[in-house]
Length: 297
Figure 1 (tube, rainbow, N blue to C red):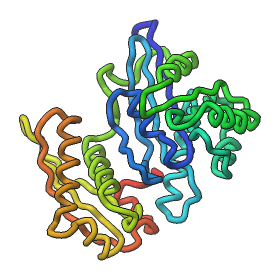
Figure 2 (cartoon, rainbow, N blue to C red; figure 1 turned 135 degrees about the horizontal axis):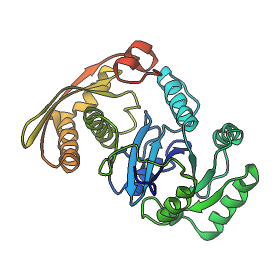
Figure 3 (cartoon, one colour; figure 1 turned 180 degrees about the vertical axis):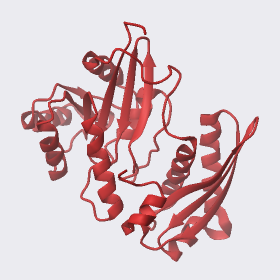
Figure 4 (cartoon, rainbow, N blue to C red; figure 1 turned 135 degrees about the vertical axis):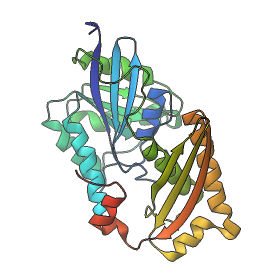
């Protein structure tokens, strides 16, 4: 065991669409969490691993905290808060030029009594003025005793190095939990399913709510080719038609864009075969949600 090594677990928390997944990807220098302009993109806690010299950062990107309206929503919020329980450091991400909403106030109440170092990360500063950034700091600072306030632009990689430098001061575990070249503990099937779901969110408009789930039915690896057969589930027959698109154009684009991302991630050729099925109201079905991998276990 190298006595100079140290590790720490870092939970990234905040409401939907404040840039938590973009921040994680930027810190890692690799895309492992899907990104979309639509809120509630992240559904499960995703672990990203960064090893720099003698320090190993173990990040957990969590689903956005929101008022749940479905069983899936309940699972997402529980998943986010449970990740904080095992953390050494919390990154509470908010967006510049937004006042604390009831959601942020609820997160702060949850964090206050945990005895953890909590950094307030003010994201998207590239799109806001210094005056608006200053007002955001003034709005949040009295709400709890943050360890520090760090303004960043996760999209443009501004200030992210400061986060890494600051939070490592709180790491005390004298070992590495993962191999130095490992960037995530997510199974390859899950990564493939999430990349496909990201393309659905990007290529379909607001007619498609977050009622889609992706399961990987086959994942076959050969020397220089990965073959994937995936099933896309939606809640209404009309949504199935939108996902497929006229003459199958939309489903072709979903497959093409997903294949490009996965080939870059896996470093080999990828073949994707996509099928679309309807499972009505699956987000309110405990058994269906479990089948799609959303479980409290």
